[in-house]
Image (cartoon, rainbow, N blue to C red; front, top):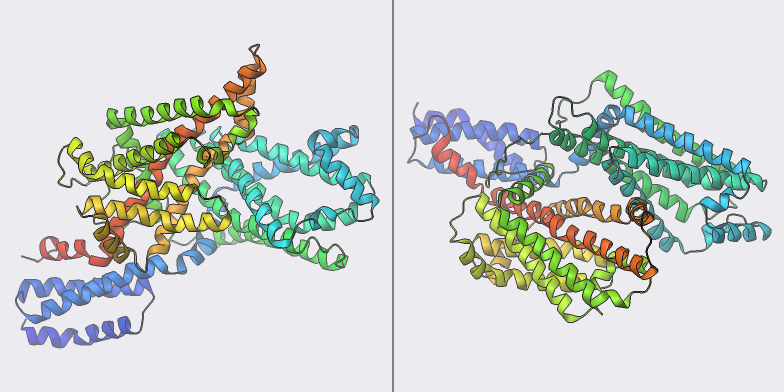
Length: 606
């Protein structure tokens, strides 16, 4: 075919595509169809008109569409709508057995709580603290039994309740690692507490007032607890019932679906906190209005989490829902030119950590050495100052400004070592041209120290909600700057300029991925502060006669080991996924893989 005829037959299609790009076409599926068409034309042009301008024109047009597709896919709200409209209802349907168990446990535990309170009037003080009971009795005597909801300012109350309820949801979820039994135990305890708390007001002749006040926010709050319990049970079922998968693959599959179910729970929990902080305090609101609000909350829960999944099942779930991809038993390094979504990056992060930790003995030895040295130095320097061992379980003690200077130095060096190990692993996995391990460390370790110093300085700032947001925004940028500097063999100043070029218009997705990875890491620390670790060490000490000072040493040593071990072995998980995001961002910007395919791999090319 002559070039002029080829252009004549296709120019309308190309002009239409340019108009769509200029008008800001936002439909990624439509753009994907157009991309396939114009890429076919480009392949034809490269074969028959390799030295003509039409090839260059089509090459530029194809790259524009390619970039537009992935930018839209990463920034579109369509994925969020799709999750709530299609994906979450399917997960809820698939988790109906776990939801039934969770609901049954909650109702049973509430019933047990009420029955126990009826049998023993002092049972309420065993479950709820004496201070809270006495305060409530004083409020009842003053004629304002629900005054507890009016003590704090609205915003302060919202922040405190939100953080506490989300923490409980995550602990309930993480406890599912104990074959699902841990989630059931926490659900059982919370249900008993709810039953006892409600019956306490019934005893005082305040059933109607307490029910309208408590369940105004409690309807959504308890629903969130049941959903978090179901997510934890599903997490455990992957270990108990692997089916045709290996136990690790089954756990990976159940964990991803359970985590998505937990994410669907969080908005319910947050909205419950909004109601409790801004509406529940107005106890003078007419009973009819409060009853209607409770009824609306109940209708939403039943409608969205029970009826809607049944309707979607009968209609057929969307074919666009992708099942959780299961990693192969053998390690496969991600392609450096591939564009991975956040789920794939999280899976790749776990896979890379597992592979390198178990394949390279020196990495495992190095991590254990870091943890042991830091634990020993911290205990030697800091332990005698703590009389109350229970204070040691709080994470902020590890980054106390008042700690001896050499502990701060150790923290910075430890972080630098972890960063360097992770970046060496990534270099190794993509077969970049690097010298020996020793030369690599000599050339790049000082960069890791500088970035670690900046990161550690941020951590030392007193923790507030604003500072957590600032840390979430700044930390990924510093990590990527270091990664660019090492991977592209440039200084930190040049790396800073390149990093901001890569992440422009895409940084929100980087922060989102980093926060998701940090959530996985935080599950471990939430679990440390759960009753399970406390009961475990109490059970161990129960079999030994020990002095109070010995108990103090055991507690502080135990929690110190758990915290520092978590830093050394979980921080790389956050780093792997965040750094690997860099390759996706570079591919979106440069379309290097597209150009490679056009030049070498596509059918019909020379």
